Length: 185
Ligand code: S3P
Image 1: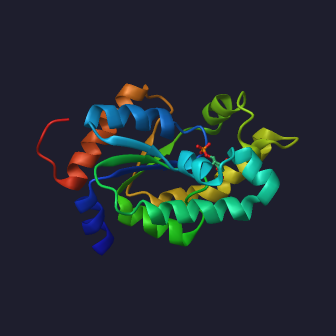
Image 2: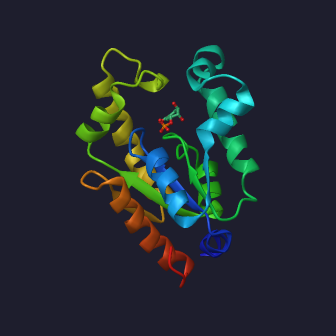
């Protein structure tokens, strides 16, 4: 496929997955081991908007946040040899999924509902989970998005039983095959 050729040329590793699937922490470690730059699209959105994500949601609404998310993705297509962590909803729009595929080797991180809930429950920064029944909301969103993560990812890794270090080793192996790398990382 043409997008796989261009994503291999760019040599980026893009992490997609639900909130709490480990994109930022695994991504940081992965970048360190590869000697790549690490980028988090949520941080770029915050910089661009000049306010935290929760405020973008309350002041401008989710649609405005999604527009910012797409425009940030469009603006990073020139990057090479980066690890890019995305927000959990970056896969919702078809245009974003196409951009991510072009941007690099897209790794889908997954984990069981219980593990994800355990990771996100103590963090009040995620506006979509500020509901009366956060676990129910999480399960519903996860059901809706599972096919989208599968569609976006070139390869998927279940992190439920893995340490971050083991997850990084697995991702480097898969990236090496995808990019036909022969050097060690
Ligand atoms: C979102 C996930 C968040 C952030 C925003 C929306 C989502 O990122 O982009 O709150 O729709 O799942 P994380 O996955 O890094 O928490």
